[in-house]
Amino acid sequence: MDIETLRPVAKKLLRTYQVRSSRSADLAKALMYGTVQNWEDGKELCIEGDPSSDMFVVLEGLVRIMRKDVNGVPRELAVLPSPTMVGQMGLVDGSARSATVLAQGKVKGLSITQKTFNAILTEASAAGSAFRHLLLASMTSQLSSANEKIRGLISDMEEDLENEREKEMAAWRDNLKNDTPPPQKETSSERLLEIAGVLDGWKIDTEGIDDADIKFVEDDDMRRTREARQKRR
Image (cartoon, rainbow, N blue to C red):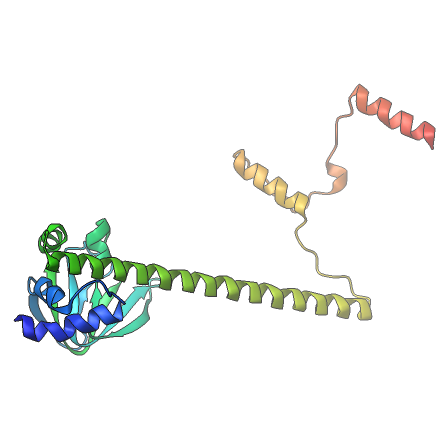
């Protein structure tokens, strides 16, 4: 693609990622190193778990970001409009694809291989500088987004804990009114015993252990202390 075709795309990318230190003409020159590709609806640009061999600049259309949950079920994380960049993190750190990217409708974009990516990054030119600034800005944006999601997750967890406390207090009040004993919960001592058993390689079942079954060996110091306390009484 020629520079005049890519310049509007470069301008939007710089604006999207808030890069103010580079010119759109310079970034367009860097994007010219990419290879034009087209994807039909539902086709994969990249697949989660695959090696990261290239990155993509989406020029036209929408892409869906999919990731498997703990049960292996694909979940939609986002739908990104063009122009946008995907897959660049894997080229930076050599990690596998962290998500699957699907075309939503017809998509046109640029593919930039790892070799080309490395060449642009090390190029001592205005084009190389513009590409580096865009890459850094996109990574910063991803980190900021991740931090925001973590803050939201923590807030949700705190809200869930508060709701759980309110439910427990309501149940406690109902038990007092009905003279019903509260449900038995695992005590701290039982939990500590279980943890110690796991750490030491024991297989301890705390169920059915009665206090009478736990005996302590009293040494001379303990006996003298007990007798002194009894005399004071």
